[in-house]
Image (cartoon, one colour):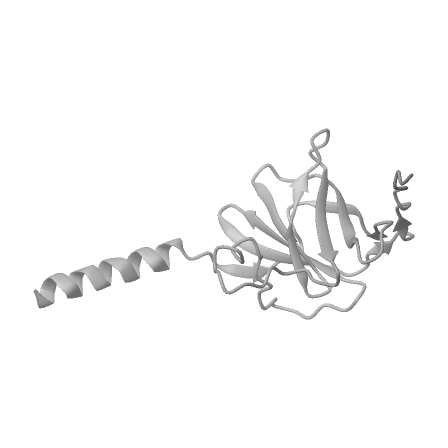
Length: 162
């Protein structure tokens, strides 16, 4: 019985080491950033939703690159390509009533929270980090200068009260 447990432990240790992604920074990524912008927005209702839109415009993206997440101001969200372009990627940070995380006693309710992991570098308020896979390895790239677009304030909805 001891050898079976020992063998299972060795097998699990080998599998977990093999599937763990190596994380590193990359000062010369396999893509070129044309522009990276952030734009804060607010809804038109009191105590409503607000957020920040992140846009990454790229060129010369290697086919083996998969953009995963963007980290900005101690928040993280997924990155996805715009449907009409393979060079424009977007991430959306939303907050409702100053809350960006689902807090609950039920773990299923909190499953949608993306963890903010320790980055291999620090970010100031005008920087973001891109997390991406390239040839099976996980990388981070720091964007040193973001273009801050003007605040987008959506108008309040008029209610139909008689």
